[in-house]
Length: 346
Image 1 (cartoon, rainbow, N blue to C red):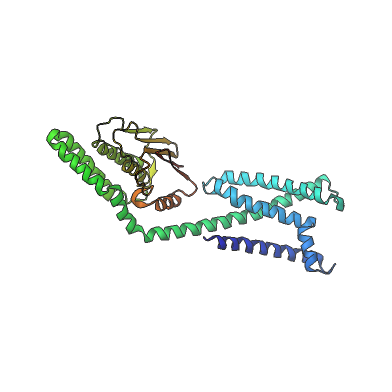
Image 2 (cartoon, rainbow, N blue to C red):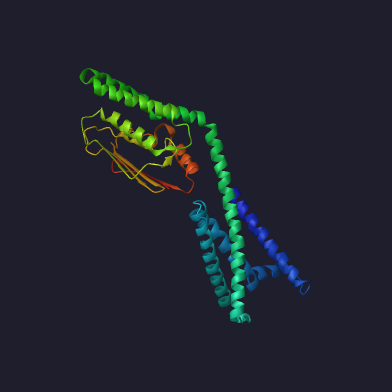
């Protein structure tokens, strides 16, 4: 959703809220005094009535909108959401009540303990009502943005499938692997057959096993390991690639082609096959959490293409946003001839 539309939604809500407060005040007044624009301004912004309705409203709305929605609702932590809402409402009501007393104590405010408790509850109620509205508005904006992303991805679905095949099994990798296997056939036919089977498995995975929305992580890891094995044919340097896996991948599901583009990109740009630790790939699997790190050294004088190979960085980021809204963190750094990708899925 575009920023001007979001601003318009917020403006419309507060105009409506102030209009309701004005109507409420006029009903309470019932002809006791002549209502003017200047008087309404003073009542709403310079008197205890306005402070006790606007301050908790603004605090509640934007606390829920900016903090609680992202921290709890997007992660489906409903119990923590309700507990945090209660804490924020209580704290906000106390702060508002204290502010009103400090600013307007010379206007005859004389609250007893019972008055303080009742006012505190009323302010907390105002905060919760506005906070709930903030959650609804934020949810509507996110829902609308998700729809736009889905529409865009559906339009480009065919192009993405072609791009996947071209980028993940790119001609350069395919031709090099076939040539290496061809040379190996005369030297070690058994080993060449093993590599040919690995290449066949990779192509089968790409063509037939990437269609479901999620696949077992073990399948993705099997692809990665076979891809790395085929890349090792191109060098005699045993320390060129470091790959480590920590944790249990059983029962862990993942969307296909989330990790592979980063790994292929590392091999694509790590040109020096004699370098030590030129490519480092680390995966750590925890309960409901996957930590993926991939780094490669590169020549700064060489031309660096898109960070995510054929799919493009924007498509990868949008895909992550769609599949893991509020549940992922992607960090990419490129300095000192070292390209690093760190992806956290939770």
